[in-house]
Length: 91
Image 1 (tube, rainbow, N blue to C red):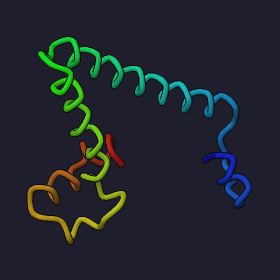
Image 2: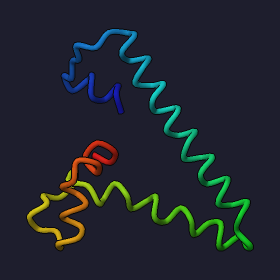
Image 3: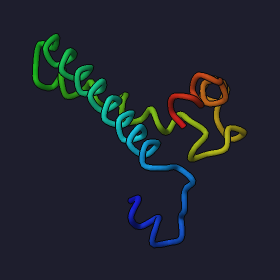
């Protein structure tokens, strides 16, 4: 994805150290979600229960204002998407 963005003209002011830090954050985030899924899988009583854990994680990005303006969202979802915590974590 980054290669396509560069081909389309994207340029960044970040140096190699900043890019390495960004990749490191992504790796740590992936590792954290993996261990969260492992813990839920170990605690589940069946395969279906373990696989059902990932469904809320799939929809978390859609609760942010990254894809849809918050004005068209229902009240509780709008509050969640507009909160500072949601913006920092999900988009």
